Length: 429
Image 1 (cartoon, rainbow, N blue to C red):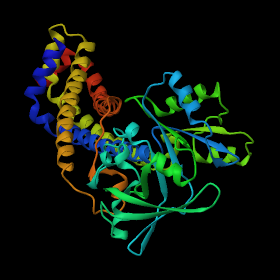
Image 2 (tube, helix red, strand yellow):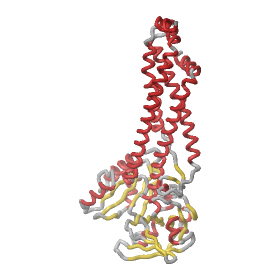
Image 3 (cartoon, helix red, strand yellow):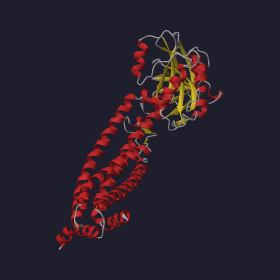
Image 4 (cartoon, rainbow, N blue to C red):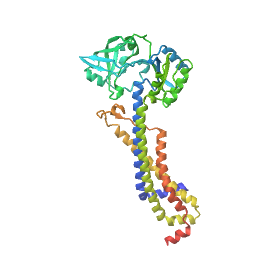
């Protein structure tokens, strides 16, 4: 009965409630768009960083402060036996020195990172890498031998295109100079800091470094969807610690540097989650989200004041109606619940409208190309914003908005419940 009466009153008082409904709708759509964009940017950064830092969780060997993994097969065997929630597991050889350079047509470009990849194992994980020319498939099998994937910025600086031979220069583990002619098999579009990288086959890079073809410096692990990266990293660390020397939990890169400064006389494995690699960027985005929720909090307070005043007027105008309901036997608690249910229904309906409006805005924003905006490449995928909506985020947003509306209605609802039938009839007379 309470729900029926509340619904009837919302319909009859729709003009009075219109401004409140519009305010709630705008507020919920605003916070949904802001939080969706912020969390979407974070997911985009994670996607790009996973390619750059070797998966959602990476295992890197260190010996006397330098990256080194003497037996990657044993590491892979241990991880496979642990039956972890991992969808892809692959070895990588990462050239951690900073002097890797590409030469072509009299021009040179230094690469921040040179990565040797098992393309057959990581092909699906690299599928979202956007190519302006060429593709990942060109690196598969023997046809990909001595091939290289370079960024669009590097290609533009060199004046190189797919099919051109570029000279790759680096130094071996023994600090000997080495060069190789590599065929450009793909040019990918990545304008973020994660774009200053070149990808080659793992065995090709090992050959240039005078290592065994099956060698690796890192093991890349990609978590199954929905699994927490930090939990996976700890599970990996515990699994490896049964057979290998492993550093303690490493929440940031600084903690790794502190461990390396102590010196390690035996090969020790470092397990890093993606969050540890992105600690600084994640802090920036977290701060942005906190600011967004602060703005939402201020907006909700403004809405609450408007609702409080509106309900005071509504209670005054409905004094006779309330007195009649009390005279017919409705308890004071039922009267209070009636107004609270009205506020709850109004908040839920308006929030649903705000969600629809936010989804429309998401769709429209997806057509905006931000490729020309400086630094936008870090947070955009193929030049466009990515929006991420999680059930937990939506529940929090809804709880804040609906809770604020209901809380504002409690005072007037209590006042309405205290109206005595005789007083109501007397005032109306």
